[in-house]
Length: 222
View (cartoon, rainbow, N blue to C red):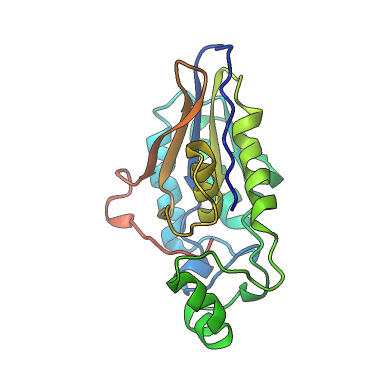
């Protein structure tokens, strides 16, 4: 059972917003591949999604843009940063979960080669993947984003991956990370965290895709 509860912070130093964007559709997403740490670039649709997201965020007052260094996130971030007149910063804590041996496989291939993984999901359990990073380590790594900015007075756009967005939601809400599938987010969706009046970092919205229109895609795979 992996539960991370964010502490309540006494001092408030003005506003804090962390706007987390999942990367645009990647070539791996378009081909139904489970990516993990594999480094796919954006598809044509992914580039258009990034541009639509940049146009939306250009209306915000943003202080910094940070991103996973994997290409699908980094390229999305550079489009967004360019629209904001900023330069994106690479942050390793935003890397996608290293899912180990199933990286590069399609869902069908996983079912054929690793039936135990499918059975675990059917039981409502989070399965173990051969060679994976480790869920507890991943949750702690990703949650550093919320901890490190807890006293900040700024708006940060963080461009990352589906697994990262989900882990941040679990952490902010104090949910059991051993229960899979509670948060699924579309490519270039927006999820937002902010500091409330008591000083807690809280989840304000998740999987907001209003800006995408007919560009919406919900591919999984990191």
